[in-house]
Image (cartoon, rainbow, N blue to C red; front, top):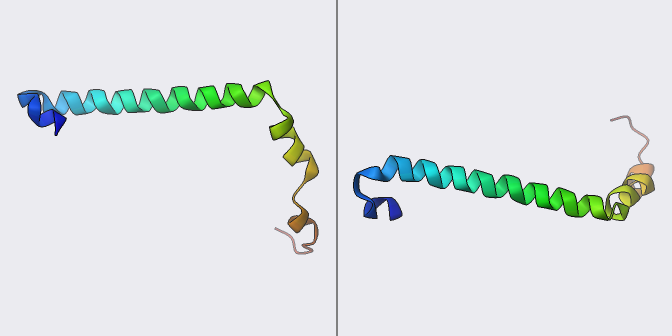
Length: 61
């Protein structure tokens, strides 16, 4: 709809919108990684604890 308002610049506007969306996604993932690294209890704890339902399985993966 926004591209229709810009006239003949639809393809370039769509490209800029995709570029902006990709940049927002990348910066969001970066911010989440930084927040996770600030308190590693939420990352290291589950890895060291293991999943209790997997301990009962005897078959190889």
